[in-house]
Structure formats: structure tokens, C-alpha cells
Image (cartoon, rainbow, N blue to C red; front, side, top):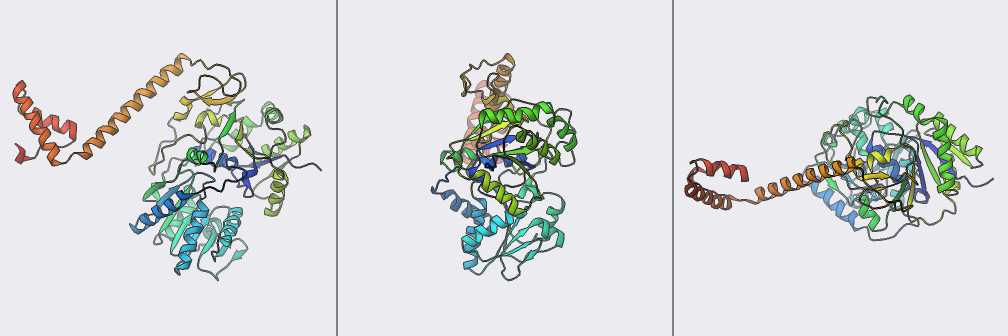
Length: 469
């Protein structure tokens, strides 16, 4: 039988095995969650063969974590998929073990428990594993399934707690886990500190540490850039949202399960990605099985996996699909859900915050993204022509107007930031000198007596002291 070429899966179930060998990502699942979308994009982003470069940012990040914990603050550490967050946790665990201290790591899926446990073992970190069917009490350090810890109402007796996929712990049963461990210093690990429901990670953390951006990791060769083709941008404006802020699954399935969209999924793959190891993200099991059936009808060896697929079977599937995978200089995203037009490129710069936010606000990335109507390539509007087919890009009057408005807003924000930095740099001596100059100007120009005080407050945010008058 020929090698498996396409695997269709549901949601963001982690692949877990040699993700770097994947070349193609077919997105068939519209989402209103930028975090969910970025998590899925990270599955194909790793360089292959892997680059064994200097990852000095990991040491820098660990030092920043230690400073925050020493200051009695629980930080969020942000690093893109493929940056090595779990490896950093292993480095801390190894150092802690050498000093007789212990580390716990919570993660959300069984396959990740096994993956991180194997990584810890390779680093010489003695630890136990807690998940369904297993509970090792021999070692103080633990790698644990959050689902099992929640179901058993467990409290880990460790000195420091790492929380993988930490954006999932803001509410619900996972939040209850953190509440039980409130007295244990913790580090929240995530590639995407943003949730579809708008709840900020400031609810479970005190500070934020930013690792290198996705673009910086690409520049250093650890990740690869993404080429995007978006033939379809389905209308999702009428889809209802569930309590977590995501699109209603049944309605989403109706939109994406249409025969012409599923058929275009196969056509696009045959045209752009034939024989390359490919993952498809489907809306539901029913949707995924329909996609697999259409691929098989075209003579492509495709299979379906989901959360109920046994780990050994999932590993066999991905090992078979990825064997003899060619070197990868970029990943390919075939976007049939229109998500790239809402969220931009995975490597775009994003301003992360711990604050709550309004999920109904428009996504600014849409202003900087264009889709070529000739070849469906998605590219930034800063380019004068399509990078794939060379079709010239002529901005519409609306785009010009929107871009001018965006530029004015950015200039205003930059000016406000510069003024604020200047204000903070002004001490009493500088403010007093400025006030005396304003007093002299008021006297010369015949202004009212309080003019100088008002102007000082307007420019520095401070009123003059009594002794200056």
C-alpha cells in the first residue's frame, strides 16, 4: 500500500510526533479565535531538518523567570510553537533536581504528557507521571495531565509549577487547579496569550515575559516562513458563537461541509502540494470523514484521526506519512476557511497583553493583507505585486483611505508614547526650569497669571510646587 499522504484531524489535537516533517496545512475550520488559529499554524512551522543553532534566548528566558519568581510574581512566558518551551521547563527541572528541589509540569493532552516526559527523561530529569492509568509517586517532580489532576482533585507537592498551554487555565476546571496551587510559585507557558472569550491571562498571572517572536525564530532558522493560498473566504458573519467565543460547531460544519468546498480542498492539494506530508484541520468528525472520503476518491491515501484514536495508531499514521519527507524551506497553508484574511500571517508581530479585551473588536491584520485574484496567494499590501504570479497590486480607494487612517492613528500613538517617555524623564529640576521659562514668557506676552502653571501641567502632567512660585 502507498504511503499515507494526508491526515485529517479535528480541532487542535496535538500531532505530537515529528511535527517538523509536515509540509502542508489545509485549514478547513473557520475560527474567531486568533490563539486557536496560531496554535494550529505552529504544527507545520518547524524547520526540517532541524537547525542546531545557539538557542541563547532560552537561558535569557529562564533568568527572567527566576527574577520574576524571586520578586514573588507569577509570570507568563510567551514563546511561539517550536521555540522550545517544554525544553526550558526541563532545564529548570534539571537544575532544581540538582539542588534537591522539585518541579511540576501540567499539560492538557495525553500525547503531550508522554512527549514531555520523554524529553525530561532524555535530559536526566527524574520525575513521575500522573494521567489516566498511571500515577508514579516515587519522584517528587511530576509531569501531569491537567484532566487527570482535575478529575482526581489532586494537589501537586512541588516547589515550582509550570503550566503548559496556560491560556486554557483562565476559567473552568483548569482554573480550579491553579486555585488549589495558589501557594506554589508558577510559570504560565503559552505561544498565544489570548482567548476567544476575551478573558486576559492577568487573571492567573502577575507579569509577562516575551521570548523571541516567530519572525525572529524564522530569521535564526529554527522555524520556516509560511506561504498562504486562500481560494475561499466563506461568510461566517451569521454564525453564532458558543460560551467560549468560538463558532457554533453545527453551523460551522454546514458552511464548510458544502460539496464544492470539500472538492476544492482536494483540487488545491493536487495542484499545489501533491505527495507532500499534509495535515487537514476539520470542523467535526463528520466533516473530517467527508474530506478523507473525497481524497480517497481521487486516489490519495488519506486517513482520519481524532482524540479517540489510540496513541500508537496515531504515531503509526504520522510516521508513515512523514517517512522520507523532503527538506523544508517553507510551510504551505491552503486556507479554505478565510482565517488568514482575518488574522494575517503567523509570523506577523502581535502586541500581547495580560488584560481582558473585547473579542468583537475588528482584527487590524485585515488592513495589511491582500489576496491575489489570479492565483489566490495571500500577501502583504506592502508588496507592489503578487509574489507568486507577479500580478500587479493596485490598491482600491477604500484600502488607501483605510491605510491613511491607520497611519494617522499609528503616528498619534507614537507621538503619545514619545510624550509619555519624555514626561517620565522629567525630574523636579527640569520641571522647575521649564516652569520659570513659562512664567517669563507669560510676563512678556501679558498672559494671565495662572497660564504658566496650566501649561506646565499640560506638557508634563505636574503642577508647579508652591516653593517655585
